[in-house]
Every structure is written in structure tokens, then in C-alpha cells.
Image 1 (cartoon, rainbow, N blue to C red):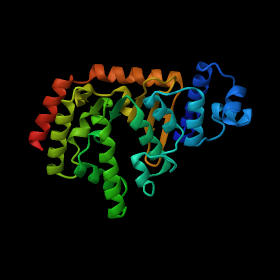
Image 2: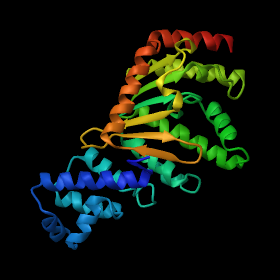
Image 3: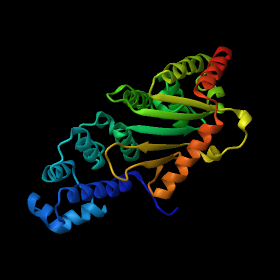
Image 4: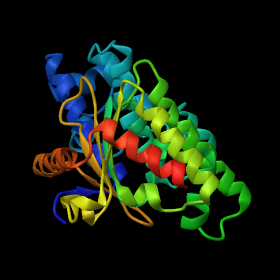
Amino acid sequence: MRGTRHGPAVRRRKLGEELRRLRLRAGLTSRDAARLVGWHQSKVSRIETGASGVTGEDVSRLLDAYGVREPRQRALVEALSGAAADGGGTGWWHAYRGVLPPQYQDFISLESQACAARTLETSVVPGLLQTADYARAVTRAALDGLPVTAVDSLVEVRLARQEVLFGDPPLRLEAVLDEAVLRRQVGGPGVMRAQLRRLRELADLPHVRLQVLPFAVGGYVGLSGPFVIFSFANMSDLDVVVLDHLTSSLYLERTEDLEAYSAAFRTMQAHALTPEESSELIAGIGDGA
């Protein structure tokens, strides 16, 4: 598929674009930037084109040279360097690097810095909305044979990720769920009752919008599979679509891809039940679970 990249590659490219934008905003040439940080000009060029990786320390030096002082912007640009995912940063997920594949670490680093996320789920409850018991059941089913300690660690990671919904500011989440997500008995009736109750609680948060696509809708554009669209504040051309597969994730960052998936998401929202109707359906299913 043309225009697709795995997480680290898309992050390098977007990091390079943002660093180039910040350099130009500071009124500097690549030669000026190289002189300020004591590098060859070619290194600055390779970083800006995404041709080579860069450490968190190098990014910090460039941001200092470009006069970038705003903490949130610095944190996001530094996260794009992959420092936390690669062991050179302070992201909380660094403690779990032994059980998390690099692409998952990359996903978490983007999620932790996003200002908004739009997600479609066709099979399971989105990770940010799962209870511990539901997350454990999903993990065991998806990764059959995984040691109990590894399962426990992955569940801890899933729950830690949810802190983005309670930050300052919190992540704005819009979720569309296929009705099948609510009716699939993951973990048994007790686990599902608690999970559906949790969905209703989180849907009451002012920054969470939860809608259900009922079976009555029939076929719809999202049947091809789940996806997440991350959006970022104060950044140029950084939004990205993430498609999850069994063993990997695919990152789409072309403008036409973002527009297509954004349009598809709006269409699904228009055909889905309203948040109020969705909450009533979830309650009804939960009562019968």
C-alpha cells in the first residue's frame, strides 16, 4: 500500500518535518542550525528528511537552538524522537520494555501526547475503556499461551494507558462501537456486566463521546476493521491513522488517507445511535448479561 509506514518510520519523518518547521520559524538555515549545535550540516538534513534516527538529547539541543520553550510542545517533539520507547526517556512504559514490542511502545508514546483520538472498534472494547478483568480476558484470548506474569504486565500497561483520560488536559475521545462489541461474551457474564457498566461511567465524562452502531444499520464503511485517528495540538501535519493487525500496526499519514478515514468516521457517527441512545442500549444489554 503506497504511503504507509510502520510506527518508527512515520515518527521519524514527522519529527523531521516538525524540526524543519521550527528551524524555519526561528529564521535559521540548516547550516546555521548545524553550527549552533556543533554538527555537520548533513546531519541536520538527514534528520529533517527522516533518513536517520535521532536521540532525545539531540532533539533537545535542536529545540534549545530554535528557541522552543513551551513545555507541552517540547514534550511532544521529544516523544517523537522515540527516546522513551527506545529506553532513553522517562515515559512510564519504559518500565515494561521487556514485554512491549517496539511498535506498541511507539503507539503508546503517540497516544500519551495526542490531544484527541477517534476510534472505531468492531470486535472488542477499546483499550482505553476496558476494565482490568476484561483486559485480562482479551489478552489471554489474543495471546494464547502467554505466561501469567506477562499477561499481568500487559494488563497493567492497558490500565496505565487510561490515565490519558484523566490528565490535565485529558485526551478527547470519540469512540464508535459495533453492537457486536457489547454482545460478545468476553470473560463471561460477570466480566461483561462490569465492563458495560464501566462503559456507561466513562461515557458520562464530558470529553468522551461514545456511540454504538446497531446491527440494524447493516453493512457500513468500517466493516473492514478497527482504526484509531490521533490528533495533536500545536503541531504541523502530525495527525496519523493507526490500523491494528494481529502481529503489527500500520500507520497512514498521507493527507488523502487522513481525509478518507476522517470522512468515514463522520459517516459512521451519523449512522450510529446518539450518545444517549447508546447509553440506553448498553444499559439494556448489561441488565440481560
